[in-house]
Length: 157
Image (cartoon, rainbow, N blue to C red; front, top):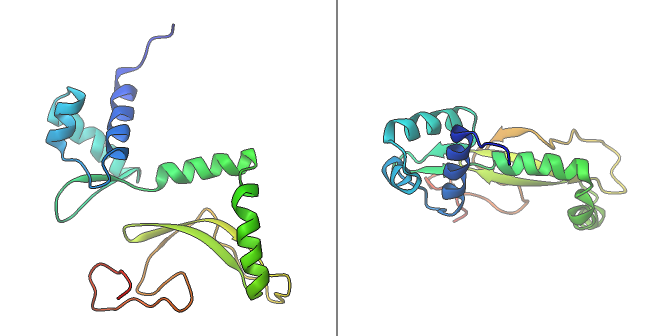
């Protein structure tokens, strides 16, 4: 059996801990769970944050997963033919509306586009954003769903 690389094992354990805790985890709690010093955990989290795999909640200081791992998985899924799972649903909606329909996931103030379908009668071709990150501004990805600009959460009223 091949030897494991300790740093990679720790990083994976951090990601797994964050995946199991949707409200986020503090450096102290990760340090205890993984059995590693807070300094080491902090450095690993800083790197994961710089690479956009985790983000720190400004209010609580806890770390949370971003959708970056999902983006990697979707990229792999695309190469492996996964779009045939969600594409029929997107295509049905696009055909009903004659519009470009895009599937996206939101993470904090960013959105990642992961799939698209165009309506059959669409005469103007729009640039699909699949695989691109964008900032979420006040508004919505779905027609008729409006956010209250005064709301800090960005959730619909």
